[in-house]
Amino acid sequence: MVEVYKLTKRHTNEAKELSRELKHIVMFSTSVGHGVGKIDFSQKVLELDDDEFNKIVENSGKYAKFKLGNLSKYFEIELFAEHINKLLPELADGEFKEILADLKEGYFIIRKSF
Image 1: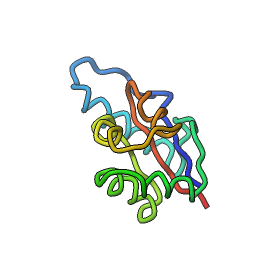
Image 2: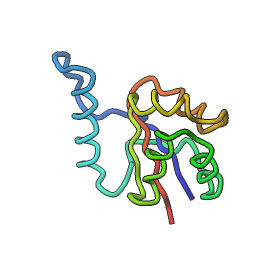
Image 3: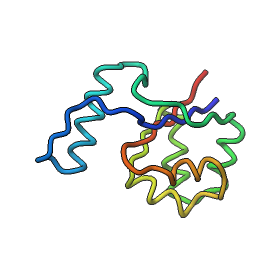
């Protein structure tokens, strides 16, 4: 089973003097430190069976195969805006692509569950 989580809460104080990228790093590192082994600051937005996810990867372009294909190696992938911008043109239309395209801020985590 493949689970897709989307950041839904922030638990860092907004520092106005930090760039957007640095705010994401602070938010991510604070969240990971707080919820080691869990994504309790995120919400599951999609669940795919392994065959469905593998079909998405197989029918995608080179970058998507590289980025999403690493799930079987690392069991968890972070997708930030810069990754999603490269992935979207390579993905076939479907619910997975729609969810990724809906990212306004934050990031996604794709996790392989057993």
